[in-house]
Image (cartoon, rainbow, N blue to C red; front, side, top):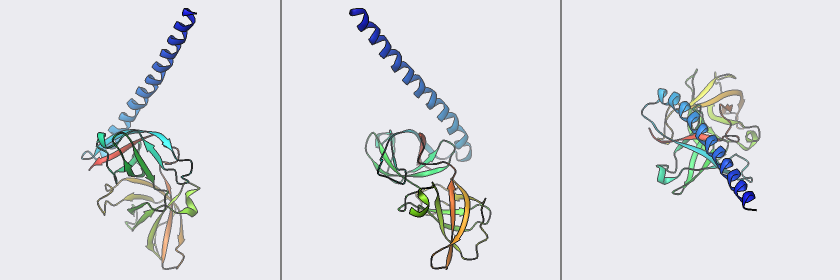
Length: 204
């Protein structure tokens, strides 16, 4: 009986060691990715975080991270993928965790610009496109020169998001309902619905 208990304890310890190993491996890979991101913006400060929860009722892919105010995280901090693509922003934070609203959410707003044409717009979520993992860049000119394949980045206007964060690629350009402007349908470079590891931009 004692031998069985000892084996059970040893198995549990081995399983925990495997979990710890996997986490350390993931963190090492994350910091390699961070080194690449920091080359582009060496003035920014980043906190590494892992997704620890998702709200099954949130159709826009919102998630909870294992980092909070004790780690320097604050509401309105930008959240990016480990390849530097914008995923969303922190909307709630406690000492040990934070909640993220993704770029697919209709309440999300950020100033964006089309890299090629330098045309400015408002990056936000849209219920029509969110189910397909798409967001939109609105307020483009009706006669916009933006087209499929163009890259979208942040401008930094408003002071919430750093400038030049990667967002994604234009899939289509459609007229706004009133016909006074155009909307670029954008596929994010990183899907917030499947994110596992992220970086929180705590200063820039």
